[in-house]
Image (cartoon, rainbow, N blue to C red; front, side, top):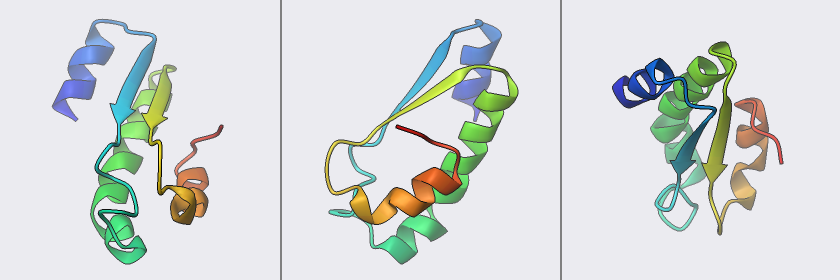
Length: 76
């Protein structure tokens, strides 16, 4: 969150979160929901609250997370 606050202070247009190790290759759905999802939800909410865009880069093994990604406010 501190990194996001610093970036927002600099008035960036977009915050990019690279989720290379947040895929279902590394996390079960239950553990994803328990560990990364709450933190990620806080980040997304803060960025949207500031009126900025949030980009989440996850390139493979993400389909089990689709309902969670939508729930967090991410769209394609």
